[in-house]
Amino acid sequence: MKVIQLTVMMISLLSAGSFVFAEETHEDRAKSLFIEGRSLFNEEKYEEASLKFKEAYAIRPNFKLLYNIAQSEAAAKRYGQALEVFEQYLADAGDELAEERIDEVRGEIEQLKSMVGFIDVETLRGSQILIDGEHRGTAPVHGGIPVVAGKLHTVEVVANGETIPPEQVKITSGMTVVVKMMPAADGTEAIRQQPGDVTSRPRRMMIAGWVLSGTGVLCLGVGAVTGGLVLRLEKDLNPQCPDGACGPELRDDLDKQRHLAVTSTVMFAVGAAAAATGVVLLIVGKKKSERLAITPVIGAESVGVVAGVNF
Image (cartoon, rainbow, N blue to C red):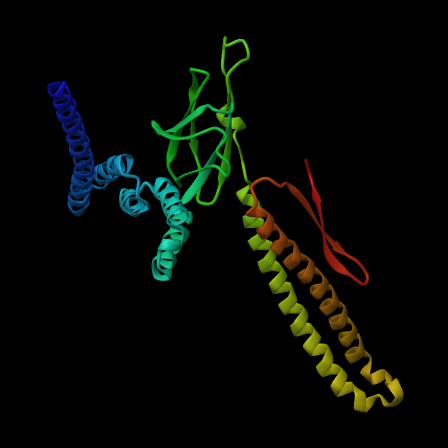
């Protein structure tokens, strides 16, 4: 009986020892991967460094490793991935970061946003989304997937075990491209959106906004100059026109004053309408989901814009 008890005790101790050894190996492996990643980063092998940091994170998830991953992705010019990881880093860190580090990372995020566009894939819920051969999310991915602007990207979707033929998309900074990739109901042929049907947030709206805003400012400037001339003429004519009665010799000056006054009024009206419309277009151009019809309104006593939402 004593022999049996002793044997059981020895087995228990051996099992406990094996568990501790495995845990220590687990920690050592993560640390080793981190050191490898840091060495690769110093050698400017940024993609390889990112992979090592990701492996270490998979073993020992720690928000601090996300910073290393994001830095590696940014250095490898994979700006879309870097943006996602930096945002996750801030979210996971919570209150554990100093204000200086938060400001630093937010600065990195803003800089990255100027170098990426977004691909919004419309497909079945639960479908796997791959961009350039890399898994980038499971549908639906709200807000779009950030990718490097100015490059051609290959979008693939695996829905219900079926791989839908890929689409190739090229976008510019700040643009969101919507790509519809749906499998057919009977499974015979996938329904895919043709390249010419890819819809995007119209960048033309932003360009038109800047043009109209500039035109509006110019017109307002002309209105201000002509208005100043009207005031100067009025100042010169007042002493010569007691009680508002001017002699025939001042007719040309009076006509000139009236013409300038009309020009000033028109320039102010057109300038205000153009500037207001331009500002609205610039604001609307940054939205992804709304489509608005903007119409300038110039009335006898009012200037403004009318915005209507189109569905």
